[in-house]
Image (cartoon, rainbow, N blue to C red):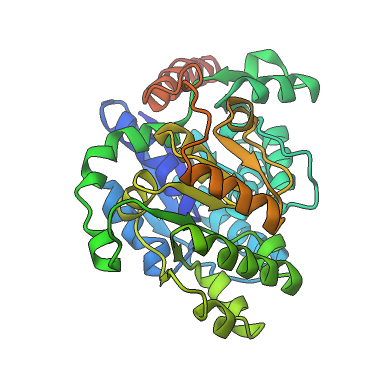
Length: 373
């Protein structure tokens, strides 16, 4: 039996592991183990996502919590190594670009355990982003690189990665979205928040570059005020963002914004419902850029770069930085119905996890057979 460990650590990871767990559950000769590092440990950032996505209770919970990048990465490595010693898996699957991703790929590689990186090859070409460094290191260590879009293949080839390691399979986040779309439509989140219809902008914000720098966060608050004149603004506030808003004394300014609905973090199904009914989504999240494209909802990204090039090329997503004037103009266009729509990329069909499982079953089992013989 093939023993596979999948690692989750932060909110975006759960949507990527859920379809893989379903795919492996259909196979008799795979034991799939889920390790939750505890990088996100708030119930609304973690447990509710497990419940929404139908994931079982993690086999291991490492409970690393918060800290600096070095502290968090080191804690994950120390605790994850214990799991590897006890379980001796044939393969470790890491997803995305969070600290848990790079920490677990490095730990497994040093123990000569095969590593598969799901969502490999994406590059923003901005090394001031911790996530970009995590992506580069993880890809360099991985034996299997599962890519979501053609730009990822190009990036990996440019970096000298052997073609035999690269697999263009589609996007597992799309798998989750397609699986749970009907269920998300039943969510009562808009009623709970007192939102009428879909005449609203949805805002998410959590990147350190936007929320940890006081001037940048002040600009985000200014942007929210500027777009409120077009309609309601719904802002589910990430715990990290809320902490900084309060620390920098910006909450009074935010609460003065008319037409603003402030909420705490919401679950996966509730957030899908908010996205699919919004006029426009403003975000600094990579995953939300993907989801809005799938939902054909306009996305304004409050960053200067993105790793998801296909969303920009499609016209569904626009990089606006933190320019109040540019963001307001784009939002005004969304309310006026001026926005390009685009077909989904090749292989974004809800079957990426099945392709990944098929590759791993053939390849990893083949390598293990050779070692045993």
